[in-house]
Image (tube, rainbow, N blue to C red; front, side, top):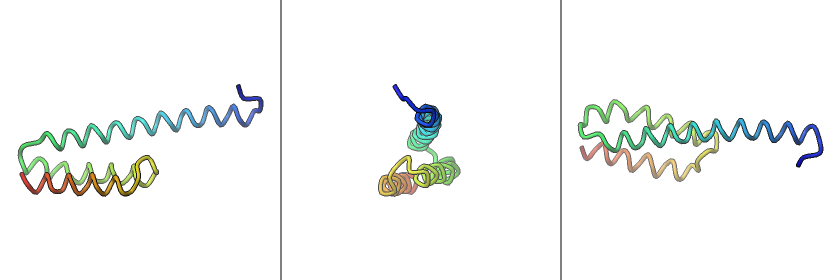
Length: 83
């Protein structure tokens, strides 16, 4: 267990950040799944910019790697184009 006040504070703040990161990552993953399940092009094109912005936010906050974000975005763009 931590011995210093600052270490205890760091544990608390890390836990808050971890929970927020998990929530944002899970929300984005659900949005990606929802986009992949869509069958109509019109709905997919409507949802696509929202999902892309969620992915970009995760990348900006270093929750996911930038290369992974690029791969996901390109695969989603291909999927929307193929509908």
